[in-house]
Image 1 (cartoon, one colour):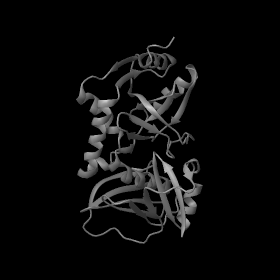
Image 2: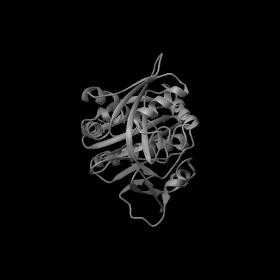
Image 3: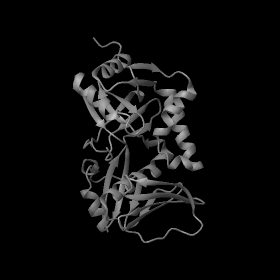
Image 4: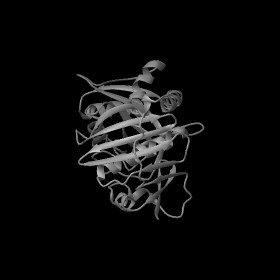
Length: 289
């Protein structure tokens, strides 16, 4: 049986399978995270044959990549199932709560395979208070700043402006980095999932701040001091499909509350210009000369 280990977001995942595993090695972004001779924390097995059981409750359904397929998330007692159907292919995933194993059907479509890996990782990581977060992440002065916002709000544009107008800034991830709770702080990791930006870094940094972006008629930034407002700024950017389930939803809430306790949260209403990036940098690093 073919086997390989990947180190993603502080977790070692042993992948097992045949043809699907070989295709996974070729998926863009996976190569920087492959490691040798490491003991695995969790396991993902491909090319398993199974069916969605009768009586499974569908928790959520949503379109995959602009209508190229349909995703569905199901639960039956302690078992969870995720499917992507489209392009004449049905990809299936199964995970039993609190186990260290995810099984997947044979998957041919590279986009389906990439997303199934994201889902497998998320199911295994959340109980350990680690999770992907929908954001664009910059590193400046050895610390990470996460920019959150709805798709199309301008996260990638804003981080590009930082890199253009502020020295020694680099992009860690542009779509789905991994955040992990440590004893006294949070870290953010690069991941194989970086949207349209080929930005796949096997590195981690402490988090300086989290900034929620919105489009505005002027550049204005403030720290969010009220807990409920901070919760509302963070929670939508953590995995929304898993938030529909009580077990995983509770862990997302716990993660959100810990972030609010440890990390300063800001709101930036901005224009897509250099002044927005410079204002944000000055607010987060007031000691800059």
